[in-house]
Image 1 (cartoon, rainbow over the protein chains, first blue to last red):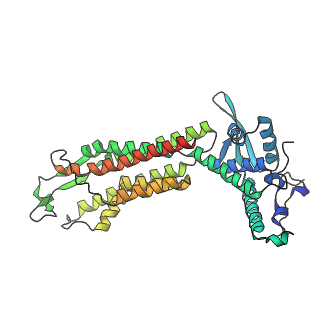
Image 2 (cartoon, one colour):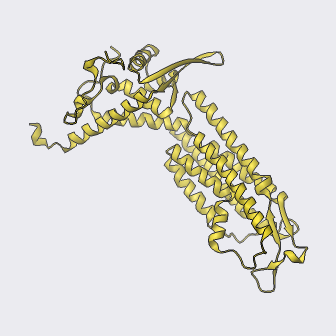
Image 3 (cartoon, chains in turn cyan, brown):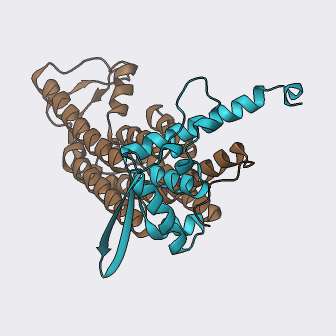
Length: 123
Length: 241
């Protein structure tokens, strides 16, 4: 496992000739986790309950995804209190910002590739 | 299993579209446009009695007289001291209220806030317009009284570095931070109204000299535009929810 918590199999292929699909990072590419990263990026700091509502997830399900992202060093989870209520705040790490930007870039590249591929090449 | 990756056949277009939708929703939850416009409208409308109270008018001493635009007429020395007594305090208070509201609302909704650069810009422009006013005032006091009306570009700059212009510049920053195209369009319209001299053909005789009334229509127009903007953005937000 690497320093960011990923196994060698999970590390995306960064070679320039590689197809965008091979560069997709499984940790980030997963739909819910991509949603978490997007919301946290836009919100700068987001509360657990807000993520749960926006992504329509159960608390357990969201915790599991946050665990994966935290292990990979993409988010930081901070627990605190607002009055008597316990609150959990999530922020994106610099690695998280980079990972999200790269994922969005790869998705756009993938779409561009699909759009420029002629139908005859698919046969 | 909950942590499965997206199936291979998942459409990247759909993923990107979902990402954009989520980002848009967060931005909507972070916006404080109606409250910011409402607070600024209140400050602008409250300036009417504030400006009236702080206007300094001297038509008594002949040395202060300058030729008026109409032949054989004389103008008086008029100083709007509201720029020192009212606007700095009112605007700084307004930006503090907006910042507190933004932080409190964002915390209650469970997201971070974006308005801090706007509040800092607003406070900085407030300090800037006050300093500009003091410098211009000092210049006019230490130099001969101008005998000709100021050129149009000077009057344009005067309106830009006035309180209403500074409010507009701040709103441009807010539109950028909130990525709010509607607010950008609104602010451009507001700035046009502020910077282009609009004469409504109504100068109320307010106070001992009608000069007091020359400020009134513009203040009412600026305040009403901000108030209507606040109402419009509030209604639009309700509809979006």
